[in-house]
Length: 409
Ligand SMILES: Cc1ncc(COP(=O)(O)O)c(C=O)c1O
Image (cartoon, rainbow, N blue to C red; front, top):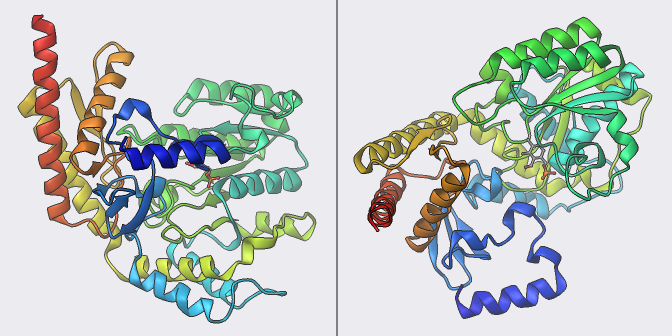
């Protein structure tokens, strides 16, 4: 870390636990000295750290950036809205406009309500399901945010232990766990909430179809947590990708190209539960993010955003494969085109992590901001992908050579 970063980090740690607000943005020392702990500016697919070092970014702010940082259509819509005000004493007309723009992209959605975070949206879905069914148990699968019901597996989580009796967490693609959980608790379950994609080649289709069938058989609401998959794996998210429709869904990242907004949405029959229950928060009608979301939806609907992302993601992934073949690195390339990745595949998982950490450390030093899932956005150009692959090739060659030397020693 440079002295400027070190000074800032020390000061931030003094007043902000973690020095950041988001777990995944905590400084990862294992990613080497060149990993930038702070980013002060971003434009298109490029980001700049405190020392003005430039990186090609594949983290996309952990998923929200789908069009590229500071996309002009989105930021202009925000600036226009700002001249009218940010938050009002009653609903703003932009709420309807953003809702209509959303359902044009996700046509299975009949009704929608906006929130602020992915966790908000997931909690709203399960609350709604409990109110609709009058049941208390839920099945969860995947990360759904930090709220009580979803944090029970974490160490020292601070949520009431009693919730464990009501929340049944299962692993993605575990068909047996689906069967046994429904057998035991099916008639007490209000909902099954599932992050519907695990970012590998195994799409889990059988798993999702089994969940849909079990939910139908037991009168349980199926909720897709599309916080990460929505507008990312396809314009219409996992629902479009699998052709499988849930009853409710949570959306957040990529809804507004980085502006803070989320949504819970779904079939009218279930959303109408809001006639008899209350889910409310003061800032959900904040107009700048709604204007940003409306504009993001329009760009995604009228421009070849997902074709572009898919095309460049394929270029990146096949480049990864070629480099692995050329260098003999113990890895393979995987992932859907919108978010490919390199998976090291030695028998020892600690060694795989060490390879990945070393690769990331090399890439940071070469001006590439890598990611566990390399998110592509609409502003990445073929030249950015080629420049990135050139860096990955050099980094991988160095690591393979170092590994060979170590083996010989
Ligand atoms: C699938 C999924 N659900 C929910 C969340 C929580 O979203 P947020 O951090 O906006 O609360 C995340 C965040 O990474 C997520 O990936």
